[in-house]
Amino acid sequence: MIKQVVQASISALTLAMALYCGAAGAHGKVGMEEDTCMRRLGDNSMVHLSAYQPQHEPDDQYCTEIPKEGDTFLVVDLVDQALREIPIGVRIVRGTSEVEDETVTYLRPSYHPDGVIRGETSLDKGVYTVFITGEAVPPVHYQYPLRVKMINYTNIFRAAIGPLIALLLLTFFGYKLMKSKQVRNWRASRRS
Image 1 (spheres, rainbow, N blue to C red):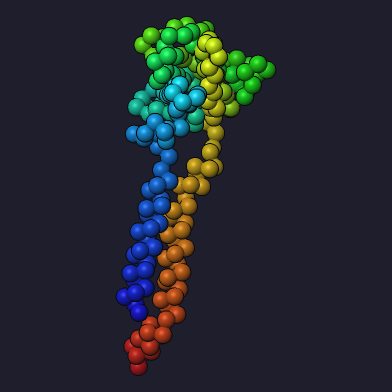
Image 2 (cartoon, helix red, strand yellow):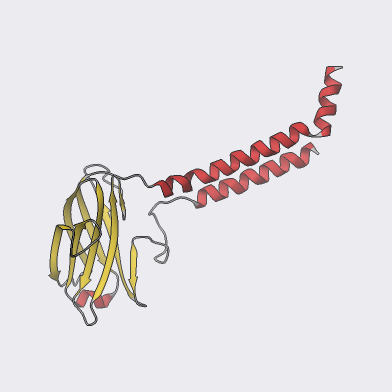
């Protein structure tokens, strides 16, 4: 009985660790389909946004969650070759409305044959939106929400759920083990 409980506990712990590892939210080396910084329009038209704050973390790359205020370098990769042949502009607004909210940075539409749009802006704490617009027929339009120096409770919950499940399972199996007849009999035999 004790052997079965130990095996079940190890299995539960292994499952919980696998779930916890799957919850990682790093930007790292993921495929294009899973990359949260990739935007797709139609079947082939794709752009990728990267944000950098070298004054804080020189090697880190961000997308929609910017951890600190300050100077931020934005890089838009035009993945689709057709986007490199039309004028593309970038507008960053404080808020979510391209028309009604304050424009923080504007890069006028121009051609980018190398497929890279580079820009710099200074961001304070709050919510912003990056609008990427291509002057084509029909026009292409992408947008990225940015959250600067704001707590993302969803990510915190995802990171905590695995260890919480493991703790609950270990507590449950520990309780069952302590209440089992074999353990009670073993304790009784040690007392006498």
